Image 1 (cartoon, rainbow, N blue to C red):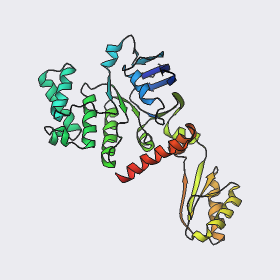
Image 2: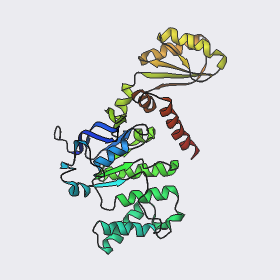
Image 3: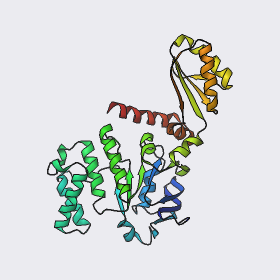
Image 4: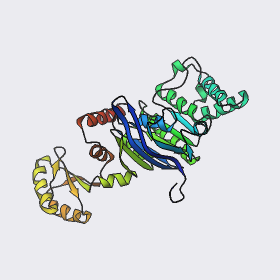
Length: 330
């Protein structure tokens, strides 16, 4: 604990190796209670391996972890009573209905049959699944299965919840519903550690973001803090007449003393360290007879932060582009 803040997760120097591969290499985490921590990183960065160690599913080769002050290795059973986990793959039984799945997990957690049914019905209502409680899971959509899987992890009402890419493959509406569910969990007193490859998801939900690359934490800050670390704001202009774009570039470079790039035929982007110069730019463009259809000053995006911190490899960019296209097409 630091400065009297109760930590839901306190990890120091976590290491996990598989053969010659050091999947996790000295990860440290400090996550206060009642918050959402987003963990970002490219595929194979060590996110899931880290969660498995935090959630008692895998023993670290080195390092230590405490969950609400309890040692994960020495007090495993206590820790398991304090956590819920939704992995990348559903834990539900395909041969059972939603109600039956939840009731079985309730019984496994020690609830009586009556209390298991009561808790199951509460969760079905909360996740909008009451109408399909007795429907075979083979007829569930991907979003319905994901919501049921999250409901299963909440049977025991754990104060700490691990969500490993919980919205992968969901359509935009279901993703938004899941986001609201996650926010409600925190309002109810839970702490959430969320891994995701959707950068907008981390931006929307997380109080703090940890970026992991090649098994190491390469950054940890608030979403706004990470964006600020990526550099200055940028000026985005769209000229009405594309034929005047080159002339506009010359005018803006003269005023700002910085390189301007053409993102599209008529869209210009320039670094904007001093927002006070915006009026000078707009005045100079007007005097040059260059009309604009749009003007924005934008903060660096999490996309730019992600690329900068993880090396900006073409592989990472392709992965992110695929994720964005999935969101557009859903």
